[in-house]
Structure formats: structure tokens, C-alpha cells
Length: 127
Image (cartoon, rainbow, N blue to C red; front, side, top):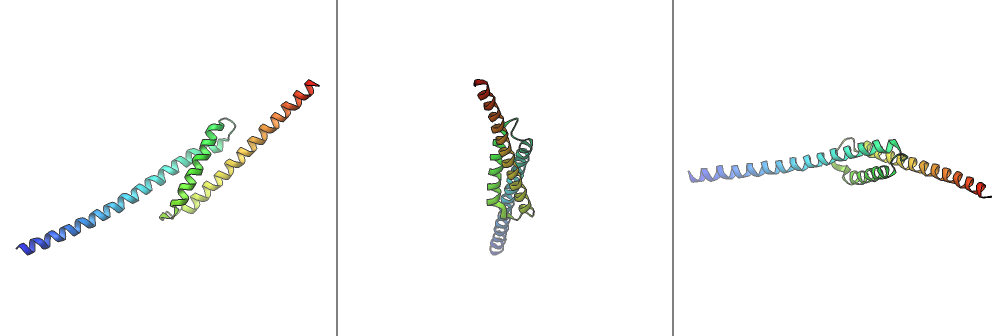
């Protein structure tokens, strides 16, 4: 009777260890999925600000660009987690970053041009 009880107890412990290992794996996977979801949300918010351009809110635009860069770095280091669309997402984020830099360059050129025109007018008036 005691031997049978010990065998049953050991089986129970082994089952419990298996359940615990399975639960831990599920928690790790759930946490990873939650982080990916949060990064996607942050990227979408950054994308909306980037597509608006830097003209209206330069500080918010630069924050969005930095958020996007941060998400790309984070995604790049965790991309081999088995998500099927990881290459597409990374490619889209990098493309968006290129657009953001281009828009920022254009805004800078526009500002230089407008200040150049103001300086020319000022030079003509002072002559």
C-alpha cells in the first residue's frame, strides 16, 4: 500500500512539474506577444505623426521619429522569435523612417529658403 502511494505521489509530482513548465512557456510567449502588440501600437501612433510632417509640430515629429527608431532597434533584436511577418514589419518601419528623414530634410530646405529670402529683403532695405 505504501509503495503504491509513493508511486502515485511521484507521478503527481512529475505531472505538476510538466504543468508548471508548460505554464511558464505560455507566460513567456504571452509576454512576448504583448510587447510586440505594444510596439505595433507605438509604431502606428508614430506613423500618423510622421505622415503629417514636421511643419506643424516639430517636437512631436522628432519624438515620433525617435519612437520609431527605438521600435526598429527593439524589433531588430527580437525579430527571430518566429513571427511570420517580421521581415515585412521591419521593412515597413525602415521605409517609414526613410520617409521621415526625407520630410525633415525638405522642411529644413524650406526653412533655409525662406530665411534666405528674408535676409535678401533685409539686405536690399539696408542699402
